Length: 320
Image 1 (tube, one colour):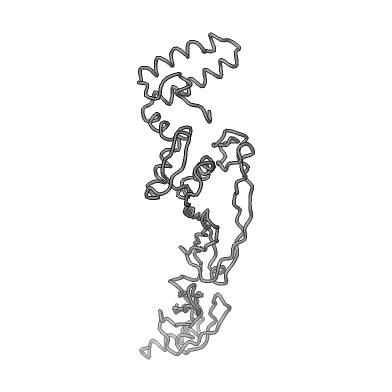
Image 2 (cartoon, one colour):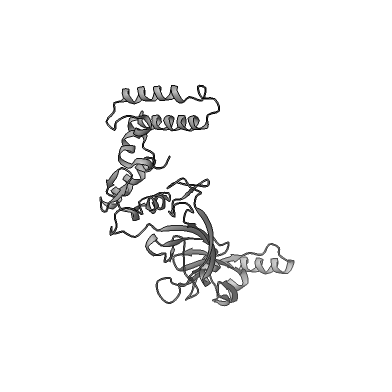
């Protein structure tokens, strides 16, 4: 019913009382009811219009919204929210007159910004428009990808103008909210976005989007089975044999940048932490990398040969 005047449909004045609205509805409903006009398509369509008009004008809240916003009364709450966010700036012309709000502030209200922008495109020119709302897209990466940097190909839906009115109302089924014409075509757009080294859970990668707002990739980093990340530093546990801990030696330590050899001093205690400088995560906001902290975990033998047992008994006897 885009463009219809509900008051005209019922044949009442705009200041008609609820009683007058109800009486007009009953009179017209009896006249155009399908039972009275069997097979009459025009009467059936008129009856639907009458019912729709009565549904709005008999409800005080709906009528209040309709009086202010006309055919777009169902978006009244979103428009009011946009006005509050905009602080009352800007104005546009609707079907029933002028009201103040900024279309750009509707960008994050469930897509209704595009609906209303299309609706009021023919309104007052020269209105200053603010930048649209930003959009977030969740992306999960592995710790290795966060270390080296990676890329993601994401698919976005872009709106084509309605083939009937040329507006940009969002699609509901296949019907344009602006003119109830053939609707808006959604076309998929693939976009490759680079994710820089050093991102962490909570990082946002900005993709410039122009006046309609930017796209932000909201990054989350998947937990790693071997490394624990704390800021730009990595923490891990490295297993050392009993003889290596006592006599010293070297153990191979994995890092995200390849394996390195760690020197174990003699008599290294269980839980000893070694710092491997610059073997942690890249620093996102500056050059360099964090550190890798390797905590020693002494691995005891699961079985002892007879000779080994005797050696340990000798050590015990010596008070070691």
